[in-house]
Amino acid sequence: MSDLSSLTPLLAIETSCDDTACAILDSHGTLLGESVLSQEDHAALGGVVPEIAARAHLKALPSLVDLTLERAGLALSDIALFAATTGPGLIGGLIVGSSYAKGLAMARGKPFMGINHIEAHILTPRLPASLRPEETAPNFPYLALLVSGGHCQCILVEGVGQYRRLGGTIDDSAGEAFDKVAKMLGLGWPGGPALEALAKEGNPRAYTLPRPLKGRPGCDFSFSGLKTAVSRYLEPFGREALPRHIAADLAASFQQAVADVMTDRVKQALATVPPVTALVVAGGVAANQTLRQRLENIAQEHHIAFLAPPLRFCTDNAAMIGWATLERLYQGEQPGDIALAPRPRWPLSERCAPSAHPSASISPSLMEPSS
Picture 1 (cartoon, rainbow, N blue to C red):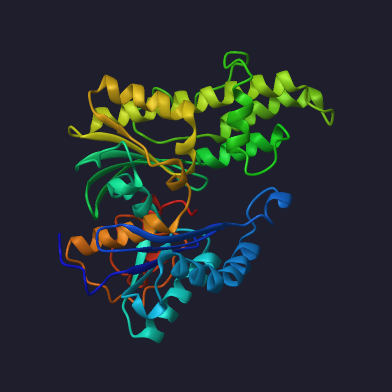
Picture 2 (cartoon, helix red, strand yellow):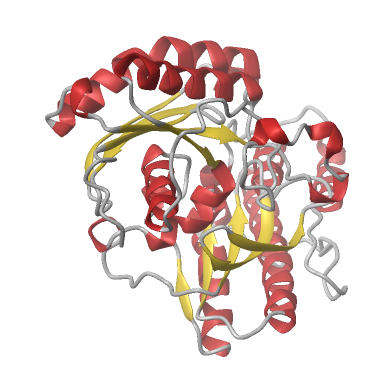
């Protein structure tokens, strides 16, 4: 591990979607201070409105940074490096967060590092032991399943900066499908946790739903057809209130279908890659206990470890941004990318400056879904 005394403590900012987050880490990854503010204005609108999210980030960041410094017992002058999510995500939020971090860096004469949001998620299981009790950090290579509101991908993680994308969603992400089905069932937004809770009351075999791409070659995902199938079962009810037992059965059947698709795709992935040390799941949907259990069973069948971040690190947070920064620094990477331009799409295959790779020059097949 490199001596990072001159580059820490570092302050990391995450604003890729609707959570404004700030964290301060030392050279060992110890979390000195952390703050997360979840925006509430979007619930009444049934989803994240990018413009509203960006304004909320701008309003929240100054006080959130001050609060995080206070919790860490540090002053702004103590920070040796500033980092922020630079992509992928909602462009307004990315601009606000990265610009604020760059401004602090320039004002203090300190370096800045732009971090890929997806990379941060898939490196989360390697967080220091103090942040993930009862788990051992996975050694490379490992298979990562990223499932969130904006992403659904299988990635072979061969090392820091060495990633092979095996497959991804061709339409909706898993988290998006959960939210949309939850809305159909009258559960509001965000719908994932509410749908999971309701599913506990239902029968997962009550409704016959499709398993898109199950059994097909490759590791891609598809959820739009599954979502449409749920809507067809709801058509006879029109505007009438949905009986709770029917909503519970639909929720359970939907959740089971998603878990079946996920496990099938992961099995396909494991069959196509060299031996791995672990199966890792990350992202907001990784908090779903049904999915976790199914994936853990697969890991046991393949005699590999199963790892998932603590629930509070499944959703977007700045601790993972700070840790991804440290992982890159441990590899000898030097900060100094103050000119990094925020990108709503930033493939893991491109870890050099996003501004050097305008999206027009990137093959669509390599593009990551935005957050």
